[in-house]
Length: 446
Image 1 (cartoon, rainbow, N blue to C red):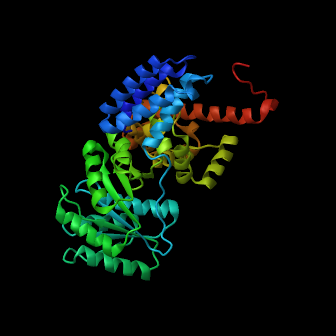
Image 2 (image 1 turned 60 degrees about the vertical axis):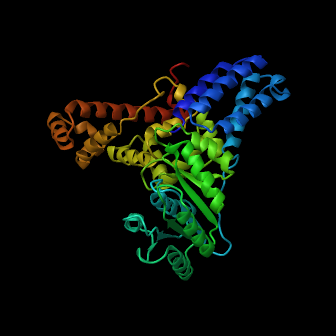
Image 3 (image 1 turned 90 degrees about the horizontal axis):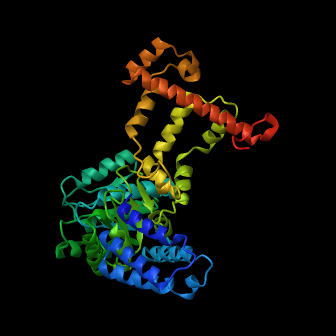
């Protein structure tokens, strides 16, 4: 996750003050010095840091903290509230026009990920909000930009409007809007051209497209890894076009996260979405409070639940519960579960959403080896139907055959069989536990 260094620094600083029964002004001053350094190292804008420290300090030495029963906890509460405020306070939702289609103009410099983000946004609008979007190829200058959008459209089974690269972006936008109205589409996402730097020609053209398309949203796509440059780019675009939102890409990269903490304050433009990976479903609505929680190590259970709800089939989950109760869980079921969990995103990211996960023994800096999961999948896929249903029929020759078919070793197969058996026993225990003591189940410590 972005903010990793910042998160570690802030969490260590907060830990020192958390349990204090009494918090002096000197304690707050010392904590603020560390917080200030952590924010500056994370590439947060200097003025933003100065204002943030001033606000937190004033509140932390005020009556609400000093007079409370748990001053240490109250200071952390203040930091979380101010961090949330810094990133925009509440989630800023996407516009919905009263007279469809809702028009979104995607702008930004070349290389920020505008075209891919346009595809991701269309995918999110259809998947999460059940809307019908149209992607519009209006970048006529960058070689292969139109082709890239059409490829994305194919992958997503999404309509893409294009008139080639010989027609002006203004005309493309005009015709695209007519087409969207005829087809009764809900959203029009216009992928405009970028440049390697901000120039007058780029801005003039964007202003012309804006005048004709009358967008409900103008989203600036910026690469979070460019740090302070991202903030300067946002400032220029906002002054020229009047942005309604920012989409931060590559927030999952090895970035210090300063852009996410500075953009809102400097431009007064909300961060609407964040890109968290390469996949076409790796775009999420930005929730300032949830992000503040994650930075301070308090987890992000709400996002975890949402991910589970959108990736787990409710009917299949019910069926699975029944199988767990009757201990008839098979390797086929296990394979399906692995697939559903993988769809939710990288496993270390999911673990990072658990409150205090970074402080749990064995979970801190955990690196989930995706290769290992692929090995498990390969082993199960190399089994016959009978072997998946009844692993107890496995003998030495069967194991050798599976090892050869999956490119693994017999030891790995033995390890998986043992883990699977242990898991089934645990399920049985949990089932008995829910039935109460009728079955004579006891907790080990009772």
